[in-house]
Image 1: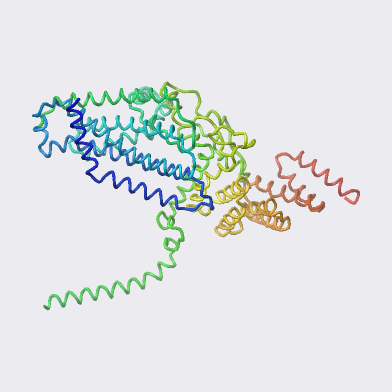
Image 2 (image 1 turned 30 degrees about the vertical axis):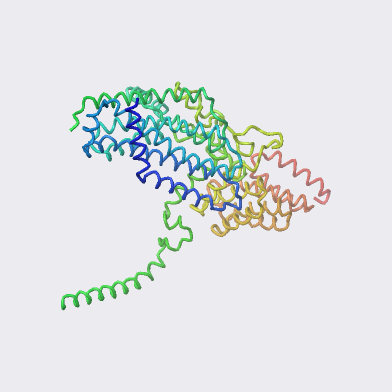
Length: 258
Length: 299
């Protein structure tokens, strides 16, 4: 555990040394403030469009940070020739993968905290109400989902040659699932066999990232979700995260390092 | 030295050529219909005519906001949402909706479908009836009407993207004046719409409603509705399927206004026209009988 924590602390330091997060955060703040300054029929209490734009920017930024940070971890170690000296220490390959995962996940958690803090302040300044429980659930589910995305990207970075290709493919997969994952079963019902079974199998086998996207509930002030439901979603994400991490560990153990 | 002088001369010659070409092309460019620089809206400059595609999207998005996010996607049964509910409730268009608006999702198809419904709005609500919040004691039967303001940014954006979409102006004006009490803003928005769509009978009709209901000015309302009726005739009469919904609306408003003003002869004339195009002529007949009684034996 000590080794894993040591590796993860390096990844966290790397995130706050790089400028990705700062650029995305400042862009999000600027766009939201410009949008907030627009007067719509002289009504200064209109807020939901602003919440929608802000949450969209948070989701895009978080995915960019998670995927790009994770995709370059192992290839960068290999490129800088630091992978062998790292593994020469009492650190197993599994510990290295787990450390990288934990570091990326915690770094994304820290970034999400900043983003959601800004979102809460922005929404609260106009709505004059603080549904903290709903915001906590939204941020928590978002973070849990990023865990699966990070595990998937880590596995991808061991399969694909370059961080750019890993990043692009992971972006396509994650956005595809977020946009279409919920509807695959409806499409499958209108297809003839065997396409129906193939699509239904795909529907059951993909990680349903859209489950963790509760933006509509936050934007339209719906009551919070039951905690038992959130816990079930977290277990679902943990299962998929474990599958991708085990896959990454197995692949990395068999891979030649040079 | 000579080479550099030649180069300077070439550059000077090219600059003169560019200047001349610009002066020549500018005259044509200013008159060209596709010139985006003439557009006063930055969105018009950026997107050109393609912005109309997005205008419809944002109009539908406003309706999705009206339902607090409970809205069918392209993969769901949209029969119950064919006409946006906010437009139907505003009386801007006739309804074409069929099917169950509360159950377009149907029964859950599998456990993922059932589980996922807890993570997005899956209950039918309207913003003017309180939206996602439970009704509070002080909010009255219709809940907190001010929540309706949340649809306005998307309607405004839709109007900016497609200024020729008349429905956007009439729907926005209805919600502004009827549910938010912003009569001045509603009137101004309708006048903007009229500037973009001169003579539009839909906007004239809505403007008449502003004068009749909010300004309590029946004379101006009558003038606007009469002009709307005339323009309806010019625009719709020769069509295969004329907009009879709005014709009925204009005629009924004119008839009621004349009746309220005690001008029974004019009221009767409008009612007889209204009866011809009304889907419920028997109800109009009752009103006609009422007016005829008031007119007495001279009729």
